[in-house]
Image (cartoon, rainbow, N blue to C red; front, side, top):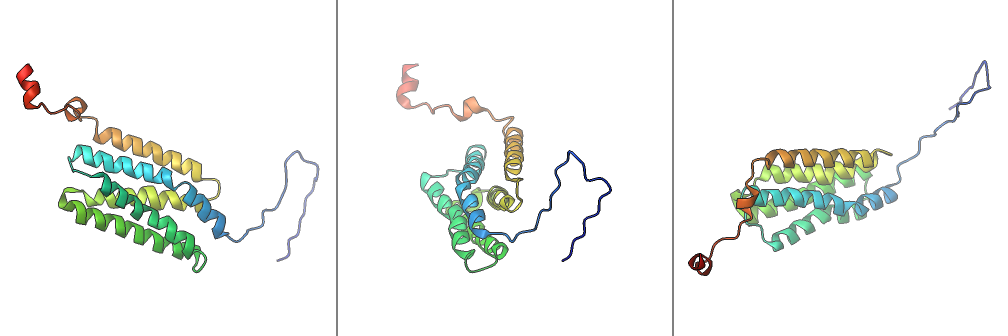
Length: 180
């Protein structure tokens, strides 16, 4: 490529430069994506906890453990696949495997009581979308901030009419009701 520079006046206060496109380096991208994985998992757990409370779905801590493992399978696969495949293909495969593991586990463990669309949508939003923002240089922080605010807005909306006092009230036992 040949570039030709023409200017009538070369005195200016503006910085002038040329940005040369560079090839995407998957190593640092994968490292940053993996480093922020706990943030994405925390948002996903807030969604699962909301489902646990609002839909009264009993979710055992072991369920959270297996969901965590399925969630992090994305990062494990991505870290190794980027050495063998195109970064976008590796990302797609890792995302499909992780979403498949988590949603199939929740369906098997909790059956029809767990709203699968919320689980799939939540993982696509908190894992796939948040992780893909690392491909957009300089926009990751803004995207995560916007995602956080959207998450807060949705949680506020769906729990606005929740009777928190009644929800977290301890059940009365025979000994406490006899004392009253």
